[in-house]
Amino acid sequence: MKLVSIRFEIYSAFVSVSVYFSIATNLIAQSDALVAVNGPTLENKQRLENLEQVVHPFVLELRIIKASKPFDATVRKENKKINIDDGLSDLHDQLESLDFSKFTLLKVVQKKTAVKQKVVFSLCSKQTLTVRPLYRENGKVGLWLRWNDADGAPLLDTRMHIDSAHPILIGNPVNDDQTESGTGRVLALSLKR
Image 1 (cartoon, rainbow, N blue to C red):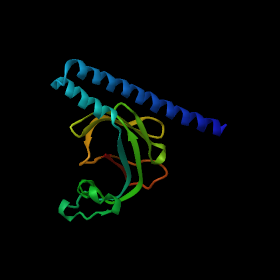
Image 2: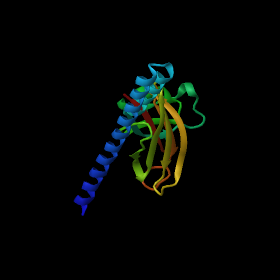
Image 3: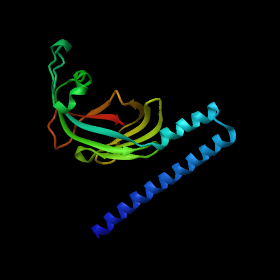
Image 4: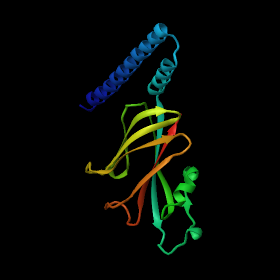
């Protein structure tokens, strides 16, 4: 039974990719026809640029981070010393602004996606992060994000944009039986080319 399920999942993924590229091929053919009929107008050039941004896939990288050892409210900002894993060094300034003194990288996941193509990241404690790119222009990607807890209830449901130079951080306190109190979960989402 498990083999049938795996075969079905592979087949479904293949069909989804095939349909996506079929739609993209039709859109490109329509755009080529517009240029052939109307010439290379500014409006047609903009349509082609928008089409290329929609069709070309990109990679989203998610780093799941455990934040622990919260600072006492009496600690002044200039006295804060933080301990972060090597895989998080590019996030030092952003993590420093949070009220924790230790940041541990738990997991790194990369997923290929494109505009209007939803991806789901499995997080710790049976939580999920669903990401759907809404648009892509001028090096930025508009995203819809939904972070669900283990029961499927939303912890976060929002829209934001991301560019390749600036990862976004989102987080929440961890309140389950499997983790120590005084910890938080931070998600760092990055756009890779």
